[in-house]
Length: 218
Image (tube, rainbow, N blue to C red; front, side, top):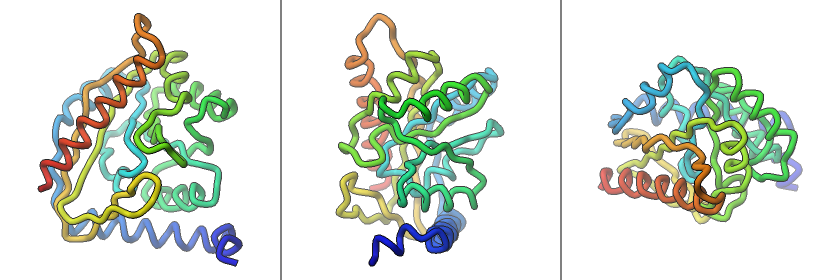
């Protein structure tokens, strides 16, 4: 019964609107500290496409971490939870591409490659939609290898937060909070290294800035 309700279009639209409202309240009632944002500004000025990368657990407030004129589109799952997310962030001015970061999802990979040729920014949670937690999927590596697009990782944390009992330990935050956003070092696929080695480098940078954001919120 619950699964049927979750898949109902009207319910997904309502829940998406409700989530977007909560996100706005959290944003407008909180203070924000942004670290290393100059790296993003520098990349945006170059008028080339970017991939913005963050762990799935930091999805809730991610839309408000992007504050540049370059249009941002998000890759979201085509499942019911992905549709709810898509509805929510559409209220926040973010367009979406339906798919996943798995290498097998060829249609979305082709659409992403096309997007990378049009001076856009693409947001990806490389461990989504179902994990394993903080492990990159092959789709992102394939995209980086084919397009040689710059990847800019980021993470955020909050002073008042709850870790949910989900596969990604999703970070649920409250209004009247303190947020810290940390942008990482820009990365590209290194042709002198294997795909697995590139994965380890990107995972390491994402984990580094996630730990830093958490520590700065203590």
